[in-house]
Image (cartoon, rainbow, N blue to C red; front, side, top):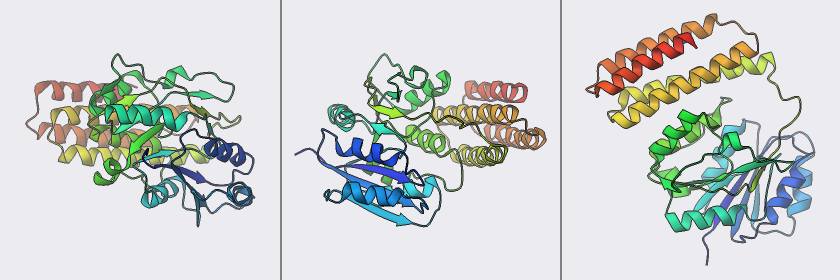
Length: 312
């Protein structure tokens, strides 16, 4: 019998979309799944729609908690999951009938810790800019992460499956209270994964909502999130001795700095706080790297990243 796979669906005020999402999950050709819906304090009719859909499905569990944000909702799902693998589906998206099956087949064949699939929008257009294109189907997580960072591929947690014992044994969870939970989670997961595989099948449909441009308030929250994530990576850098991982942490910090600057500029926010945080972060990075017995190429990479960050 195929192993159990846990599908985690964080839900908050999505009454317009949740029916499509749940129906797509219940239509999976891979039958041995448990569906974990985490109702994160919805105040609309989301829970009523869910209850109507799942009344005859005993493999669906609904957890209702007070509103604590997407990270906590996903962590709740991970904590109660019992499958060999877990996957995340956002409540306003949907998955094709073969989504779980196609990813599991690759995971079973390769033994990968993570299998990342391709995805499309609701009109069927494949989002090519967000999909990795590797010459080999399977590779070490650090190599895959390096390619992600080099090609600016978006870090999303959905469209992938993760081996649950890998996630739990490495204590990988989403950081509460930030708006960059996907990038933070996936970066740490890929750094630790021994094997990552990819699937070309675009079996995940991502809903691009109109009018989803960041408000000034959200942009400010995003900026604070960037600051928190960068601080976490600097802490990782301080305790890391591996040349490979130090290199990836440095590249990850630069990627977050780059994205942070774009958010600030796009939303016409003040760069004063950003520049101050960058200066502090870059000074710390330089001190940490210089204190380590790392190869010269890593120290050179540090200089390059500092120059890029200051001039981005």
